[in-house]
Length: 114
Length: 115
Image (cartoon, rainbow over all chains, first blue to last red; front, side):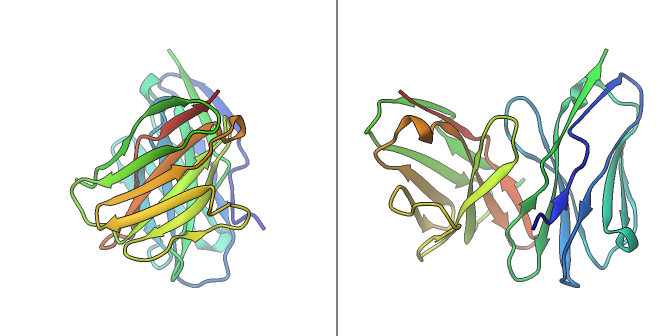
């Protein structure tokens, strides 16, 4: 069963628009970790954020913000005032306690047009 | 901090030859590293978990004799694709787990083309 669902395959926006990437996860564990990674065209996965299941505080880092909602099993990611350099594939991932393997979503390709 | 180096970034080889890919954690020790395979426009597929000083744990459907993993030190894991065939052509990417933060940091990946 797929543990992480990223329903949006591709999103295309014009520069300076905001873009929100959805991530819905599924787990029976009470302790788990959620991640977002960015994969630019170069291929390397860049770590963006880790959130554990006990910390529901939303987080903001520059133009990036994350909304963690346990009630809906969602961990959405918003890029504010998008820039061309934000063009990449973004992956949401889940790690369950005691396992530490990452279950990745299918990824969302974001294209920001100038 | 938390830099992972993967080498080579690109390799082309003839069918039947073996190829070794290295994954190094440059500024931290990693008892656990992971090897993934990624097909074009797809997500990452975990191949195996590399444990320092012990045998790797392979995911279902991954041939351990085909993909040899060695994790001889706390900063180096290697993946050897033995007797490579064109169907092994893919993007292979490694990660190293930073224990203190429970975060996997990834290498830049290796693009393997088998002719």
